[in-house]
Image 1 (cartoon, rainbow, N blue to C red):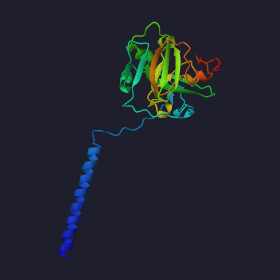
Image 2 (cartoon, rainbow, N blue to C red; image 1 turned 90 degrees about the vertical axis):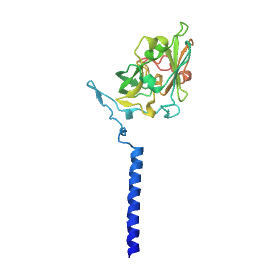
Image 3 (tube, one colour; image 1 turned 90 degrees about the horizontal axis):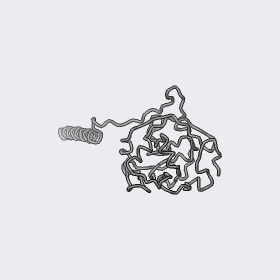
Image 4 (cartoon, rainbow, N blue to C red; image 1 turned 60 degrees about the vertical axis):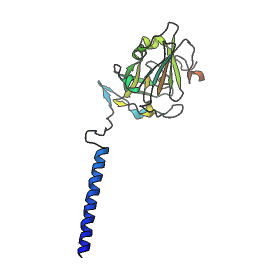
Length: 226
């Protein structure tokens, strides 16, 4: 009987030590000073205007949603410049932020009104010298997609490269880390998953859909077929 008593005591002590070690281990992994970040709430109205939802978009990318690692991401600014520049995700976000409600119109016949937040492309490219020979700006994406614009479209307008929509960080299916908010252009010009900005003298450069018969300008109110 005495032997069983000591076995019970030893067993209880062993369990107590085990629980203490588990508690300390969990505290090491999840210290109180490092709270777990919870997802935000999508904004549905801004300055009296009703917004569409992130879920109102249709999936129509050429290779499906892309998943870009934020830590290894680099935005290349290249082409006809004084040397290639590379910006991390955080370095892009270090620029002045802007927000604006802009409607995206897809050639498939649907549209969405979204509160976009991001940085101006002309602020980003201000870090490099653009020669007079450059007249075109080409955007390239993680999935191989590309599209182009006259350089004047970027320099003369407040065109955003967005990293938030309706107050939420862009989800992968919407173009994380960055989507172009190509105002007054059809949706196929709103390139997602941007990885490169290239300065070019190739005025007639045609991107993915443009090389398949879509209008190179992509201007709203005009035919999107050439």
